[in-house]
Length: 465
Image 1: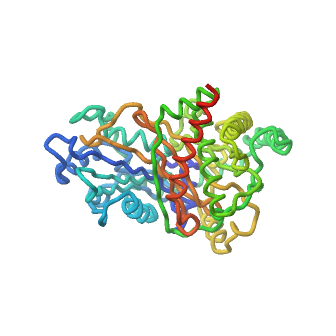
Image 2: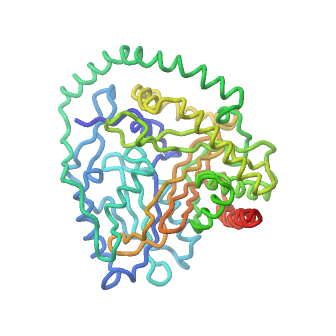
Image 3: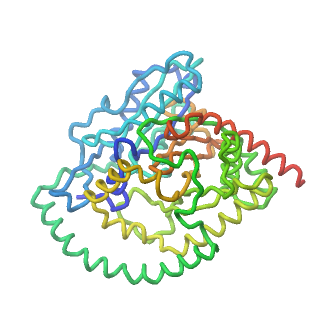
């Protein structure tokens, strides 16, 4: 029996029809690079053979009696590739806006929890020999790094070659109700002892962490972000845009200012958001606040069964500063302080406390929060999510087709209806923007602002030379 960790299960409990919590990736492919050319039947046949050999693609949820335990992963004995891989065509003219609109529709649809929690849309009708693939996988199954890793099993580094598959690992069948009931009773009996063990660590950390936050010597304090048009209650309707910048340009800026790649990413987002909000006449005087997910791989001492090795911190985005050079220095300093502040929290703490997530309580709370539109009424917790995912430095061939771009798309939440995720790939940095459409209807304007800001950062870097 392999139960979900509390953190993995929390992404199930916090999900509603309007707050869907899967991660997506949009891959654009050069169909002409497949030996013999692209043909859907052969493409799907090769894909199906790989997918059936990877346990993560065949496992589904199985709930315990009365939901006292987190769900467990079991083998889907009725697994059918046709439930997961779909062939669709983009409407004419098949340009980037039309493709993004089609992907946004699929991104807003919840996954069927009676089946393995993933879907793939093979999208035809693009200009020339292009094909696109939109991949959806629930956050309970993978984080951003894990999702990129699973896609790597479907992509080789040479045309016509695919990487070795993992060692065969069958998923377990559903445990008996009696076994689950016994495990539920044992878990309930252990919880008071486990809470007692965790309390001293929390009591020792909390005063130091809060004191530093209140003295403004670390990350921004939650509920202090300025309000923008994308900080409201969301619906299930999404908008998507995407773009690409040259990774060498990012490194040029990084080296010129003596900062890190992630600092450049935050400065890039800050400048683009400044342009976007100023153009709408709603640029706040205070910096925006971004939630920045970070991987805990190598930092946590837990082996465990969690699929999400992730934590997060708040970072100030210097949208209030008019000069690009000032923004990048400010972003780097804010990022440094936020990381130091974040590292005061034990990497295992989020995982440990998440074990006590209660499905009924979480589900009721998030539905009430949305129905009462509380995100519109209380101070803004954070403005958006900004995530930087490391990707492969070499070109990939997805089921034989060369991947020309790999745009990551993360989820949005009530009160923060915009997600900006970047992924480095083969000398580029691909940028995916996913938003609640009613809050960010002109998301392509923001995507173009990212390219404009990259040019401004490069000009500022050149001026230093």
